[in-house]
Length: 238
Image (cartoon, helix red, strand yellow):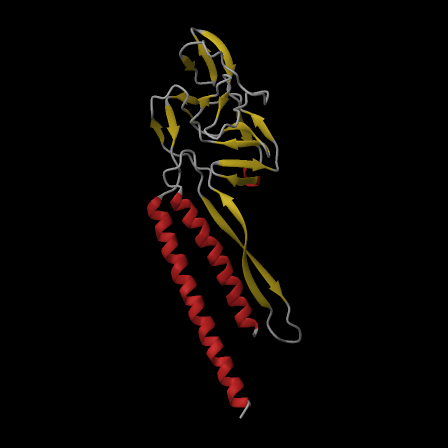
């Protein structure tokens, strides 16, 4: 295969990866706290020697997380929490502490505040939050303080990544980061609300159509190249 074919193949591989990410965004259109993602394309330029022009190839090297705010939807749930502005809840998982914007929490039989998957929610000191089972109705102040009967019980840890570009999607609505995080001094947390996904359905479907058309054009080019090469081989073999 000549250089043109290799260039087209790397482009097709990147478009396929982008299509998978767009499809995942659309699939999570209604997922609480979901953050849409995009693909980062990188260009690789190499010399082919002599006076020939350099060879440029593109590949999908990474994913970028869109951190724009989702709509806060009222649920009325006592343990449904939503963050306005920057910040994430921190939870403890078997892979280590991770971040999430999905605030649909429940109480475990032991009184721990956990996610739907059973991961403990952490406070400002990165310790699990435990609430007395017989504490009564739980109320939440805007700074994340949990109280019952006017007595403070614990405070949600709201953390801000210092380098948002280092957030890595670890699964579902969870993220890990290779950078530093810090507790937010003035968080804004709402009780009885959940943050919806920040995926815009129209934008994602439009992007899917664009990627599909680009992929089909690339396939057409590869088929034409294959036909050309086969014709040359047949001609030279006579």
